Image (tube, rainbow, N blue to C red; front, side):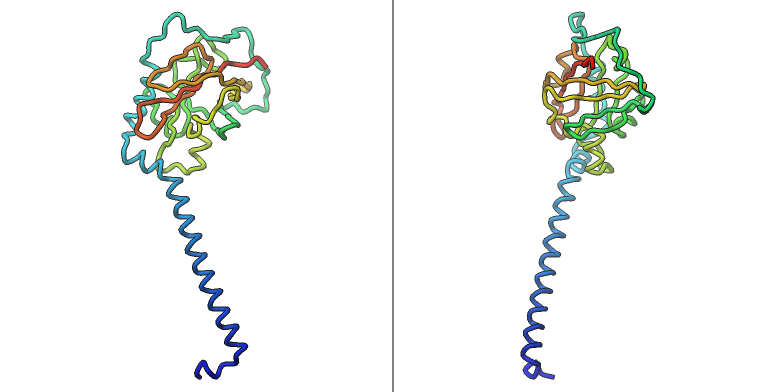
Length: 227
């Protein structure tokens, strides 16, 4: 049957339906493109990091930053508070954990000897041994983590379990650590950038890389609050 013999009203509806189908097709392609771009931006840091950087070499560099520096006698903890500990609370987890509300970090702190540091960094934040703990404050506690991490990390995992957003951490903002079922709260007071830690007077030092394939580190310094 020729289209000329189709009822005019039906023809209008048919043309309208065809236009609607074309619009839906265009919108579907547009949303698919937006989704693809979002995925690329989410995983681009990991892909680029994987292609341009040897993770083992970067991990060694993280390790050497803390372990191979000269710690002079003048670098004593700023707020040691040796006789004070926060209240023990049985409802707290027995796992050592780190929470930084302002940048979305909420993760378990990995404990590992130097020989196993890479396995710890693959999971997230690593406490460097032979330095302090929240309870033992004769030396600062030092936490290191990759910023961009590994290809298998999702964007959500990276933001919660690494130091992807550490550069956004500001002075006066708080860091919480659960250690042996006690909550230790720290306040950030300083920052430095470079290849070395410049302030060993802090109770807590957090650090990661500044950019992909870079030797420059971002260091955040915090003091323990007696609360």
